[in-house]
Image (cartoon, rainbow, N blue to C red; front, side, top):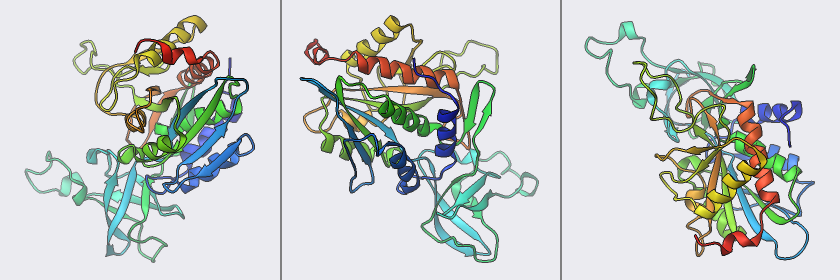
Length: 351
């Protein structure tokens, strides 16, 4: 069994502390390339910015298996300068404006510190205190003095990685957890398959990079590795929470259906049988909205059998997420064990 130890935690810290908002993923791509280029039989960056890594196996009749993890994170783009270091901005990816006022941010490639400002509640006009806050009412404030910030720059939350007992807290766990897992799988690559690792871009804007990557790699089957919301908090009225997507501490989430994909049932069976045989805990992600890179991969070319496996995490698409180290480790081990047992027979099964 593979373990999450200090080197893996240090890498995740580096990945999550790095700023790489959708469309500007270069800083993460540089880290990933340094970690895996000595392992690769082929490595390239495509025109979209995806980093595509091929690790060939041995023997005959090897399946070409694409594993995708997206490098980008949610954030903001500066769209208008108003003077004195104040900027209007738009959100990139799904972000609830209620979460934003008072949050510290990092702006531009030099990580200039700033804050998202809004009028304090006791200065808001009568009748507006309970109104819905809009992005247009907020500003990113980097202060006067002409710091190296300009319209078009990306920004994201300034949250730093922190281990809290058996959990980790950080921004961008969606999907730096997947990136970290895919790096580890390349370092421990199965020899029975050709592993096609796609570190993708612009997932948060509509699974864009994965579509291009899947067309280029042309795999026999594919898996997206992601982080999915763990909506497992207690209900305010003490009733049973029946709306959870996943729960912390119950292992990797195998998708059967989400807002973009009906997972190939052969892949679902293969993953769950592996978990049962290897005694690796897992759970099924409950049906609901959202999606992973599998949503565009499975529609590429003539169709690619696809599925998804995610690490559960609380507080997705906010300034910080939280996950259990055990879920991260079990996700890594489920994927590693399943890939080692994979054979071309899976594609001969009745779908």
